[in-house]
Length: 396
Image (cartoon, rainbow, N blue to C red):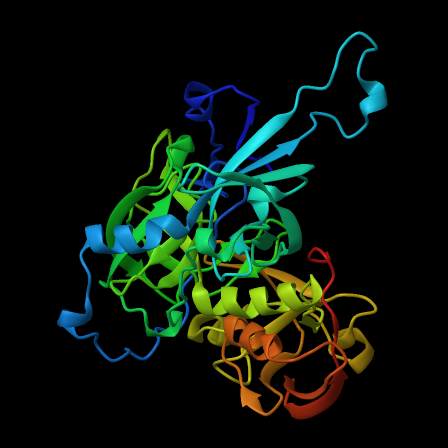
């Protein structure tokens, strides 16, 4: 994927030119606040509204900034321009390239959260603090599937100002939010806005997997904000700013940004700190959410569930005998493959969409055995499936 990179000491003028565009039905999308990963916006069930926050608990933007800014850092990752130094002409040296991003301190032990794409492929990582100190950081672990990485610096606890996580499940549309980061290298910049959408947005991770339930915001975020915190009115981190959308031909932010929700981040960080990696259960199917229209057109036995379109050879689903589709069909401009099984429950939980299927799998571990209830024609079958381990990238 494209990265936000500038030659060492290139400065703001070069940084301001960063950013790639990918057309998506009249909307162009930058995948990493200055990169090229596709963002996919899909509809899914709207969550139950959370309890309202008391007005007197809310802080002003200036108070949020005063509390949180000391915990926000600038991250500079340096990478050689070639993967094979032997190919550099004998009379030249490889010119290091730098990727600029943001991050934030999460505890007094020196752990820092950022985006995976900010430090992807880095040979050297430096972290700059609000007191102007710059420290070398080590990579504790990274998870391309959620675009999250954890760094660590050796510093006195007095110099660290950790930010607290909030509960992203309580976020509601219209809630005020503040983003703090380093757009175009301008350190600790604050922008404010609201939550524009929750739960019904999915973006694509650097390795091609979907990241579900991301928070959409109109707070202005740009290249260099990647990895910085999205804060609620109590000054708690409710998301990690990761991607933005741009209109065709636009070179600036149009007020559509996406943050990985804090509950996802906390779960990933806990595993990265403990083991340096994240293991996920893997079923091994690709499919479509059944809508009333699909159920009618395909004459399916149910009006909700997941239509299995293909099964990865050798996967858990394949070994358990789940069948994929056989016939390609286009409905309302979208391609589908019919003739496969319909998954309606897994592990005793009903699933009505691909998002819900992934949510259930997220609570399982590789090696777990679950019952998968399917409709196969007029029959209802329950198959015992021993879940595998998610590969590094989606399988064709």
